[in-house]
Length: 200
Image 1: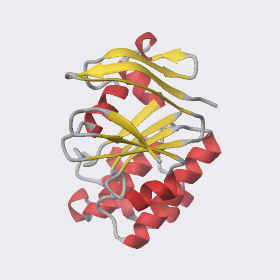
Image 2 (image 1 turned 60 degrees about the vertical axis):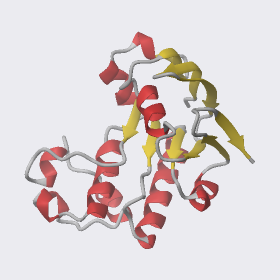
Image 3 (image 1 turned 45 degrees about the horizontal axis):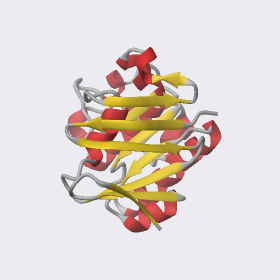
Image 4 (image 1 turned 90 degrees about the horizontal axis):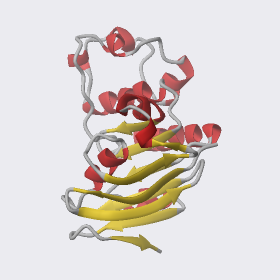
């Protein structure tokens, strides 16, 4: 069981931010475009220069290399990247069949050309690729923004099941307030000036 703790985190003249996400819990985060939601996730993922402390349970970010930290605290960007021609080339091993099924993916999708994928399929595959590494915490930047309503429900359930089964904390960014109310027990908002406030 791991909690994710942020202490006096500041970056690019934003912050300092301090909060903690308990094991298995979701912190919902919203804010206007440009308020710094993505930058916050990237700073927590150690992808942006920052001051302050980041902890996953008793392990400090500064005690690990960036790749080692991100192996444990995994970041899902709003737009996934694909650099090989075939889908399966992006996976170090075949994903669990039940995971693909739960996400509504075709059983042959690993053999497909990336160029054949819809935006929604790319996003669901990016989630599958991320969780294949069995991270201990998730940083989710608009994970369902490109999905239809059926797929949104599938992905929400899939991610929440993973978090519960692995006692993993998550920060979930979304513009959809109704979604944040479904997936998170606590919610915060980043205001245009960078200030963070708790939402009731």
